Image (cartoon, rainbow, N blue to C red; front, side, top):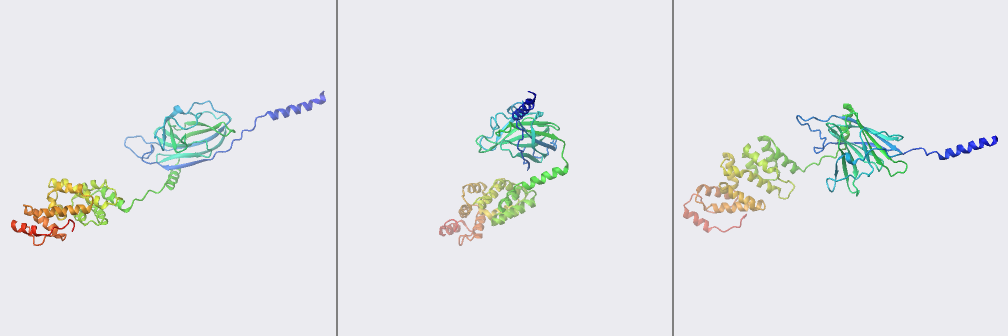
Length: 405
């Protein structure tokens, strides 16, 4: 009997060894930090507003733990402030996170879980910071600076896998606070992963500078507008009489519009401001840009013409370019609206000035005659100051030319 004891002990030891649970050895999770420059539409845009508290820069640590068991913490859904989809419907009633995703703040204990990855990042008002994780089940964790601390959001694919969504947590994490996100895993080796987010004090200036440099290097280059678009923006937004005039003259020269050049050289600052306002709505990429530029300039001058408030030099330039139509701003406005292009507008001016040769007002007749003569369209033997009978005889004897010829 005593001789058999050692053999029994050996058997019991073997059985105990066979019944022991396997060692918990979860695979590692790589964590990468990404920085993006905050746009004006982001909550953390870096824009300084008077009398409004501004967010402070913080350091954020993300630690990833693999857990053998699901922790006893509540669902994440009550903690979400909004779920916004990047494509499709802008807002969703529920997130696409797994139904058993959980959140706790302050962070709950990780028990017998093992740390499998982590990283530290800078959160500043000038940046949007995010942590991407190599495990396919885990969402991207984003952080933005907020007045109350750090706002956390989760970026995940939508349920149909055709887009992405942002799920924003209601309460920002304050300094020295932490939160824990539990995401169930499809990998049978673990129950899920706990992502512990911890906010600490402000990072060093050198760390902030390095993060900003990384974001700027990763930012796509801003689209460079075509030269015509850029010139138009400058012309519409220039400040000061000299700057406005120079910018508008550059556009007129580019479009080869000598009539506009004549007007812009004579315009005073109020009229240049009015023209700039009209130019702001133009599209320099359209095929009829030259005509829309001319039309915008003339439309801007109509109110001053109606009130007879144009300065003498500008009024003289308007008469040079319009002839007798300069005295009829409402007629000018009508033709600007009715003309489909610059050629149709010139035809309308020619027709109106030929008609004005019969006007009772000698001033209008002289203006019309000068306009036609300057363009090689004068009626032979016509004298605007001749007696009415002589003018009528000459006009009746003239051949009826087509507009524009």
